[in-house]
Image (cartoon, rainbow, N blue to C red; front, side, top):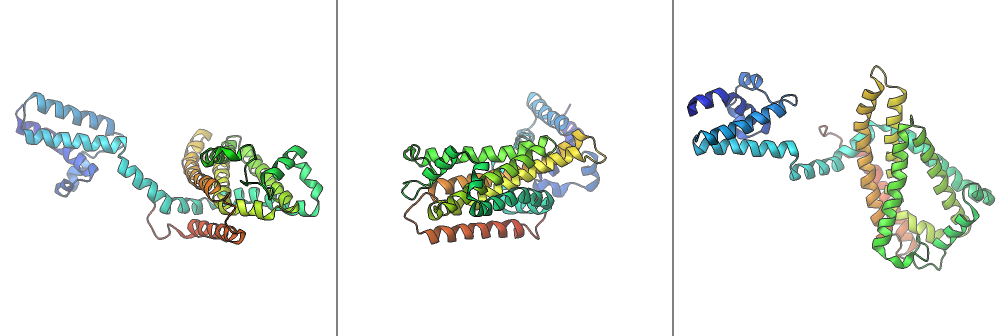
Length: 332
């Protein structure tokens, strides 16, 4: 087959590739041509194989270098698009953090609100209960656990938030510990959703009770500055991360309980897409909290008022971010 015949037989699909890859040549494509040989998700694998075959034929038949180079450029661009370009991936993440995450939180506000109530109501109740009935702490904590928390936040401790035996391990060791602990809590709240949401409900309530009772107990024994000075800075991203993980689990559970007209498997698959993106946001907040918790929170030389003020600023910034960022922009 002569080169001009080969071009005539395959040109429409090459132009469709140009349109799909959004190259300047798309301006030359007429609407009828684009529709006739459009590249879609359904025909993408077979079309990509044909494009690779075109390169091989052009080489074997020794067609012009201009044609071979143009075909090779299409193959490389298509391969990069299909298998992921690093620059695009980075841009997608930045766009998700800038606008996609807050928009997603607002779209899933029912699950986020339910998760927040399940987590924060028990937390606040235990915090207040420990002030009124100090002995109630032993309904949640064992005497050994209570004594351990006292040692961790005693006024004389060199590094609040860490046991004396672990305080010498350094910032990196504590960073890894905090990441592991936070990820464990988030994963429990999310993965429990597969049990028709009951697991997520349990872990949200349990962690709320546990954190609230620890906070109430340490406040009651007078460790206000060491405890609240330590947790103020990282509490915002850490606790909101747990809430978002719980919301993702509740979304999974609701899809299993009320799939609507879909089969449960289909409903679960559809819900998982949004739930996993919520989990991405929770993971981002969790990692941010771990860095603050290991690098900022333990510094004893910082004034207590400064730590509390910084914590309030972080909380306010997170609330503004989730409530107002991403408005007025197109969906990601």
